[in-house]
Image 1 (tube, rainbow, N blue to C red):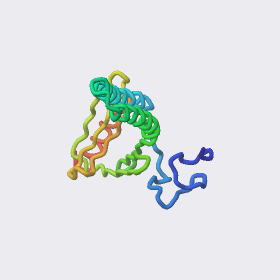
Image 2 (image 1 turned 90 degrees about the vertical axis):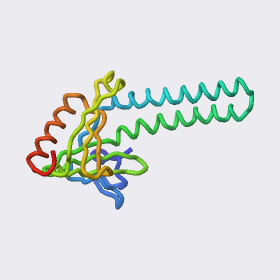
Image 3 (image 1 turned 30 degrees about the vertical axis):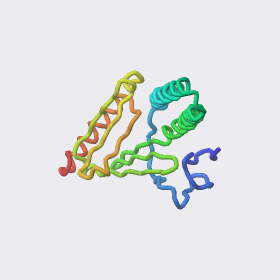
Image 4 (image 1 turned 60 degrees about the vertical axis):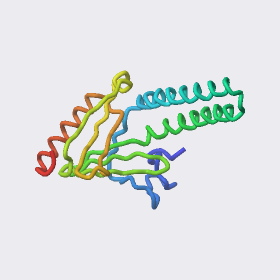
Length: 179
């Protein structure tokens, strides 16, 4: 358990300290995403695991071969492992609006920090699939000229997604290169 005030994702043991591999700037006020995204991702996982279990169970019932039993157990173990990873991964997402750019962080094992200058944005998408809509969530997707630099912020409430979209659009227009 990290000390009070410390970044729970920090690789350093010092309160508020930064480890040599810690990419998150200390001077930034990070905004978390909704933890309701955990439920969306767990439902998606449950669907995939249910299909995997059905296929392996069907194969096991038809053939009686023990490898289907091993595959069935592997699907269960994968599902449990991935469920735990989803909870931590959703909590690792964050975004921060600065004067000239938007920062998006995510990742557990491989941490990723995307810095998208407002002047480089070409357009901003807001999307929400059926599960996201059921949980009142949306995703803001930022598009730049370089496809590898596209960033997204999932798990936002629709009002926050609209506010962020409008702000990013206005800032991009002010910078006169993007949007």
